Image 1 (cartoon, protein in one colour):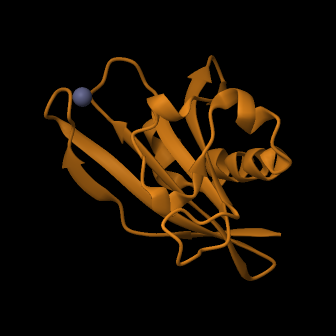
Image 2: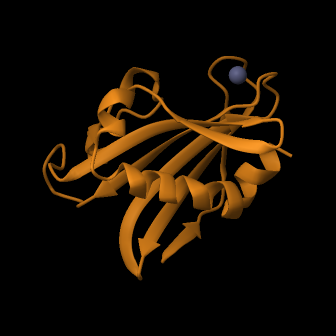
Image 3: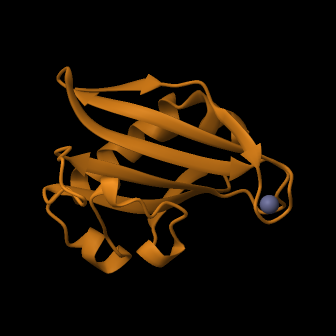
Length: 137
Ligand SMILES: [Zn+2]
């Protein structure tokens, strides 16, 4: 069972248009254990409604880049009535911190044994993450 802990949103200035940009930080627990964290950001005034995010799963280490931790950058958009989730390449991710573990390109992410966990989390995001859901409605 997955449970998401929601932090207060951070409001920043969008790098491309200097309008208000929202950044979300969420902690994910699985059966009460810390399991993943994810970040999402979007700019309400952008014409194209897309939220960009990254899910980081695995052990937090003291290493510069934790070895048993992997990150999966993604995008959320809507297609008529449904949420769509697509993985993106590391290059397209606004997050590059080595603390997130190895950031995977789309192709490697899709072949990763943890990919089902990633989509399990995104299934919860599009239902339970109020800020994300509100952005698209
Ligand atoms: Zn912008």
